[in-house]
Image 1 (spheres, one colour):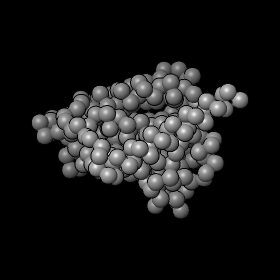
Image 2: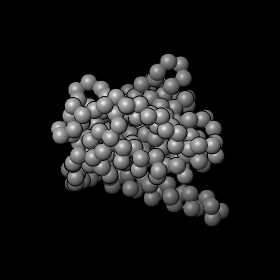
Image 3: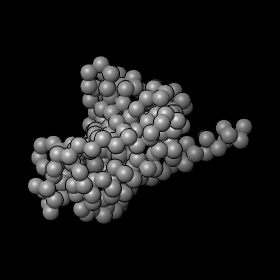
Image 4: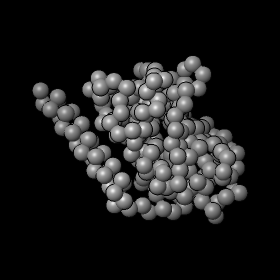
Length: 207
């Protein structure tokens, strides 16, 4: 009973935090500290913070970085929050002992695209248009089984818009679910992007 009470308290706290974040963003009261930040710091901190979470399911996290230490124009804390939302969801909906892949690569318009890829069930076609609206859930039972408030994707969209980026979803082939973010390359770093693919296995053995 204590374990159930603790989990319900954590879910309530997460819901309150998400509602407060959403209200602050929509009312314009959320401050952004925009600057030039190494993408590797955003990727590294996100993965480091989510390793214990990924081990609960259990899944591995792999990183493929094609852009090296390019600088992106973002609020570092908010960019990490956005990426954590996507990677956390991918961990929750992946098959046990599966792999969540993070792929950073250059894209059009002097931007960097970061894809979060898993082989979970994906999003039903009929629900895709509602993905980024508040409190949207494919099935209310998902919240009870997987955890979540239905606000994470909407908050991510709001934060990314205010940082000059975008978030989106696509289904690739028959098995890959892909959520992606785009970050603008900081002006002083534009032209310095090198296509350098480094594959890093973040979690060595399956938990």
